[in-house]
Image (cartoon, rainbow, N blue to C red; front, side, top):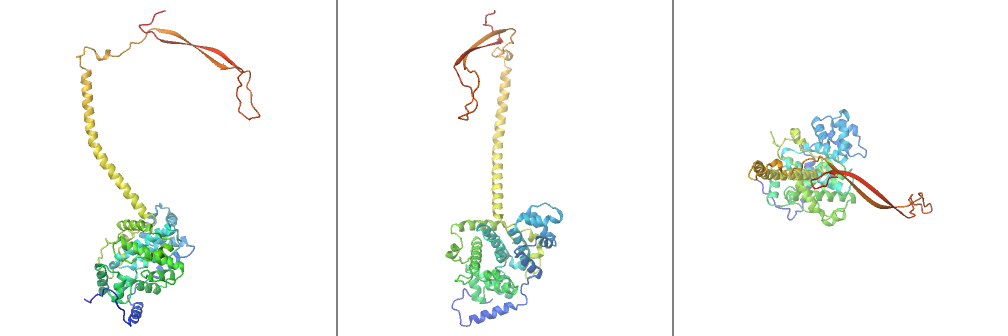
Length: 434
């Protein structure tokens, strides 16, 4: 087994020549990951300013498994030919683009690359939610860029299969930065290799540049919008590494603050990503054959079921966990109350039996039916009640038109009146008969 170098150390004078050689060799590599022309056309369609929804829906109809899962995630009922179009409207532009891009990019990763796929997928979900949180344009290519930002790892693994696995294992066990160990042993990092893929596939600069520089922490001479995408990708990549407890160099804090990222946001996004990692996983797949040639698409029915709606997914998981916790607490409380209620029922039944037995007892010498019973009255006594009261005296109603006040009575004095009420009540034993 070849010895793995810990870091680049002192670079030799011909290191740049070796790097040029490895770049040339990678560009002409026979087993280079191929981007399907149809995939490239769909990605290009998704990046247009005005997306042709009917045409995109027609393309999605070609794969029933993905189409059914897409409709299921949207919550739209089946309505014939318009189902997919209505599902797109329900999910929104960003969710639709992310789900389609995830479906298209996933086959580029083999079974041996499933850890890299999990990383790029969760990083891309995080970036989607950051775009919404920081109110960045939904037309940004960053979600797609995040899905491709570590595509250089599958390329290097194919180029030097056993050697690269040793490099990655050594970097993880020694807690060193993977890109530094790659540079020390291969004279190239997976970020640069990913840039080679982007160029080979004729992807635009807004995808190529962030992929190439997502591990570069030197001062970059790029347009401000391009720098924002680079630092956002670096920040999301670092957060995902932190959530996985993997070493990664944090991006420049001054640059993050410059583009609107605050220190107070870090704890929120880190907790967000940890919960996301607990909810999304592709590690349950089995190769079922040669791992080097195994593609996630070979288990597409299983893989597509792991794709989620990125926006609001973690919030949904939080609500479901809170609901589950509440139901569990209610169940435990109900069980504890059940035993208490059984005891209370027993005591109540005993008291009722005791009351019934005491009601039939003759120890007092008084029959229960003779207690507190008033016989009906056969006669009634007429009574008269007189009440004297006063009321205002008024000849006629008047209205104050000057002050625009409502109609009211003007009093010219008071009049005494007497009201008499006659009623009957049952005659009691103590009453005198007339």
